[in-house]
Length: 238
Image (spheres, helix red, strand yellow):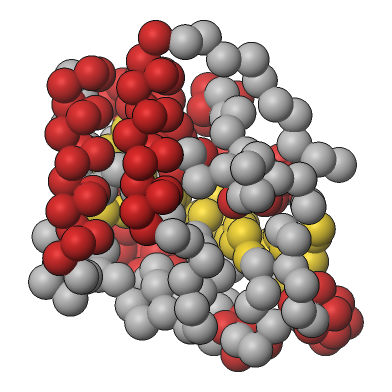
């Protein structure tokens, strides 16, 4: 328990069998619940997760193999968020890049600023490849032009939010586009209770699952279309 709050950690994963056990072992004790959601894993990720379940009462392994154009990142997140029971939900990729151990500081900043939803911003960070920094800056600028919203890290994969705000997030995107969607919707529906908190990115376990150029163009198109198209909701898997 952290400052009177219970905390759930939601992690989407695909083919993380080599790293999952060590990563879970390193998760701080202040996380009351750890929910890992495998999406289309072709290695032993699910089997490793089942083994962890047997020895770690905090850990739960879920499977959601739905995809949109071959990607199920958003579906995995929605399923994990729907399952989480704690008053605070932390979402972070299962590759070790996000500082989940920094949660006490992040929640302290949220309390000081009156935030119910914090998107963890990695930028500026000279350790991130320049092509990725440039891509995120382009997406940030597109968001500013179309939505008049200043967001410094449109693609951050770490978010901390109160469970009570989940209905206000209106999540629908099953692929990578859940990342910009959750920030835009939190900004839209939560107003001043949405904000960004600076973090420092860690070292990745294993290889990225993304084609950065393809994903980047996909985000550009989605951010534009989302500005003008009303979308229907998608329900998380059971």
